[in-house]
Each structure stands twice: as structure tokens, then as C-alpha cells.
Image 1 (spheres, rainbow, N blue to C red):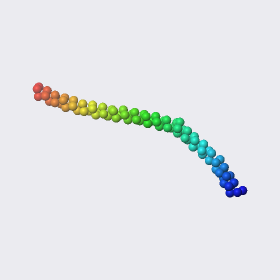
Image 2: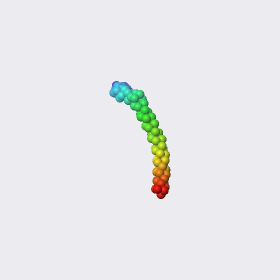
Image 3: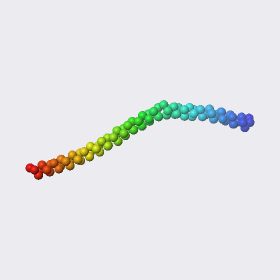
Image 4: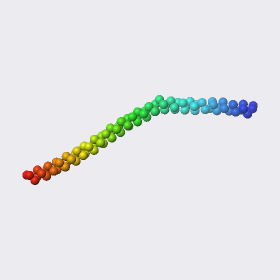
Amino acid sequence: MTDNELLLAISEIMDKKLEPVKDGVRQVKITLENDILPRLQNIESCYTSTYERYQNGIAQLESMQSDIDIIKKVVTEHSETLQKIS
């Protein structure tokens, strides 16, 4: 057997041994593409929309807090004025 024939035989044996690995990698790629990536995109979409709602809610909460602070101040001033009158 020549060196080339020996190398060819080794190459064929390696190809046969690696075929299950190649099939496994193909299955992983298919699973990633068809199952995991769409789920990740869905999770990202949900996270993004929730983040935007919270971000808007924080601005609204800060505005409400400012309004409450003003109302407290006015009520306190009015209470003091009413106490002075009575």
C-alpha cells in the first residue's frame, strides 16, 4: 500500500467517524434556528416593551410626586391661614 492509498484510507475512516459529529452539529444548528432564536427574540421583545412601559411610568410617577408636593405646600399654607383666621 502506498502512502497516498494509506492517507486516502485514513481520510475515509475519519470521514465515517466524523459523520455523527457533523449530524449532531447540523441538528444543533437547526434547533438554534427554529426553536431557540425565535424564543430569544420573543423574550427580547417582551423585555423591551416592559422596559418602555416602566420608563414611561417613572416619568409619570415623578410628575405625580411633583404635583403632590405642590398640593402639600398649598394645603399647609391654607391650613396656617385658616388657623390664623379662627
